[in-house]
Length: 255
Ligand code: PLP
Image (cartoon, rainbow, N blue to C red; front, side):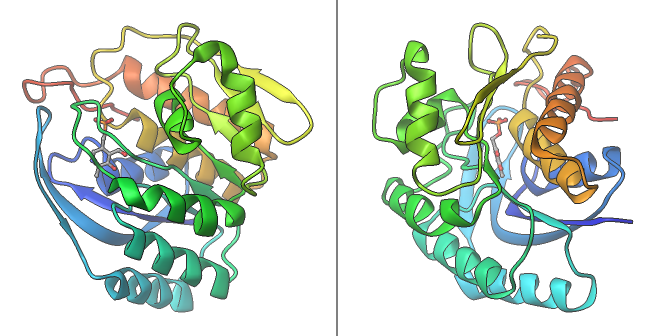
């Protein structure tokens, strides 16, 4: 069985973060491992606390898992601060880990800030150049290039992100009119269309998408095929989202 590691943060409500990643890995037929870089106290309504671990905690988890289990792909999720991003990037480079999907998590649907603002430069300089694909949503994509969100300029935004060094950029469509994801590989733009479901129970949709993308890359698909399948898995997970769990945006359900 292929092995995929999530380097990300715990969501105690288990809708997003590491917990969503493990559910997505199971759904996508790969064996999931985890390096937990921070813990949130969180439910479906709010994030009440964020407790980042020292960067060495991430490094030791990655080294220990990889030395025994290995990894066919890696996804990074919420990394919270510059010290963690830098340590994770250095370890991924040193261990030459393949098929890196970077989901640059910045702000939760609930509005909670999940990335310290000064850490944006560390993403751009240290982690993006190692990535097979980065998967910002539309808000994150424009924030990462320091511009106001403007959906009519989405292709320029993808080009600017590509210039930072990832092999491809996928701007996810959950927050756009059409719901389509936009894939740019430095040569052409491909719109990844799919059904758009009433978006009530979306907590964890982005985490599910990037985990599915890493899983399908691990399983040997090319980027476009992996992106199409990841779009499908994320959209199904929203469709079957669990509105009865908690009082806020219900968790997605990827099974
Ligand atoms: N909490 C953690 C630990 C996450 O990784 C994420 C997103 O990646 C979120 C919360 C936010 O999830 P959402 O915006 O889907 O509610």
